Length: 115
Image 1 (cartoon, rainbow, N blue to C red):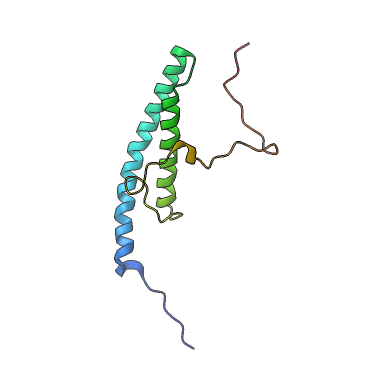
Image 2 (cartoon, rainbow, N blue to C red):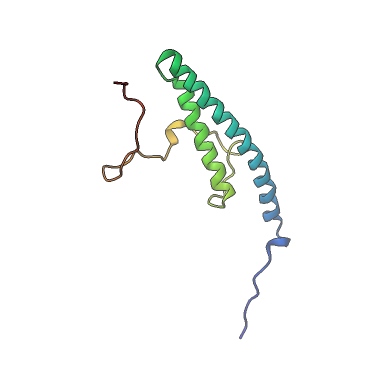
């Protein structure tokens, strides 16, 4: 009976290169997380002052959240595609997030006027 021994990944250069990219994207993620917090704060201040949301901040926030999602997919080995700057920046309309269906209970919203 011939049982193949599993090959160790320690000698494969691709896994080490991926590890370096993973370290790079951990740093990029931390920067993106701070930037996302700033977008949320600025959007909140804009809403307080004008009672409207800023469309450019909405679009950038959605793109940034998609970028963060791509980073997490790469870091967790759910994707082999390197995120931006090795790929194009995600566009807001590329969102795969769908509104809740009729069978799903939607959470509370804050867009209703105060009594």
